[in-house]
Length: 402
Figure 1 (tube, rainbow, N blue to C red):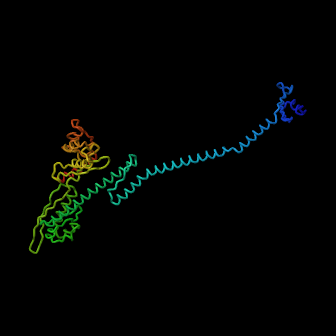
Figure 2: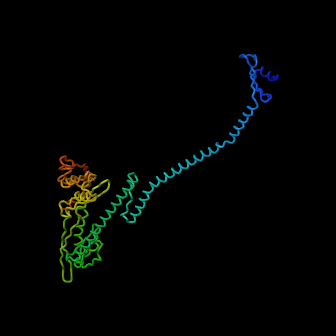
């Protein structure tokens, strides 16, 4: 069939155009394209025609319809999306659960030792020094637990020493009271504040004063009016005790009037000082004091009872080994040759002392045994630590021996 005039007019006007015409058992498709030179009016029109049978057209229509239905009712579109969403949610929940579990586990690892330490502190405050916290590892918490257990052991050892010392003091006190009660000589003791602490049975009979009336009272208050001579001799002795003067006896005679006449008593007063308390040694390992002793040469009348030697012996017992490689010995006075040799034999790691011993020192003054290459061990030495204070203590100590 001919093309309509309107279609041709549009094509010659320069427009592209297409038409669809039904012919018999099919469709005729025509496409019109103008032909022109650049910048000029169309010279002509090219018409392309193709005939599509009805059967092919119907098949294309069916395919298009099926495709449209497929797009609208895709059975895999939403189930796959849902499946992916479910998988994503499950993975998220697993990750969230894992993170929570790891957080709780790490928190438990931190809080468990702290809870055990709290329980240990409560047990120790209740007096149970046998309590021990399980040591888990070598991290900061583990080091804290180890320090806590070491502190508990030190407290237990110190308490045992205090209990033993208290029992020894109580036993000595009872022995001394028994002796003073039965001795025939009158014995009076005062402390450094002038209070009467001992007034035995013989003194009570000689002075005709009941012990219950004078104990823990000032001797001046008790004797000033009745026995001024006794007050004077006690004044001199107390003054020497508190001033650190050399120990010497104060003696005089006391006249006491009785019905049978005047009784004359010989009175001797002497200040008493503890031997060796100002001269001591301490053994330190890993920042912990494992042993401490004072000089007991005069107290025990033992020439080897120096503070350093006694402390080293106690330290070896405490650590269960004669080797004290990590130990630091801190002592008031520069060690003698005997004590320095003991430190060499004990493999002591370091020595710290205060005052020098110019006539007996073996760690710098007369000899240097701590760094003698001929010996099988050497140890570091730190000297003159608070030397003036240590010198004053030692001067007081030696003055008391004169």
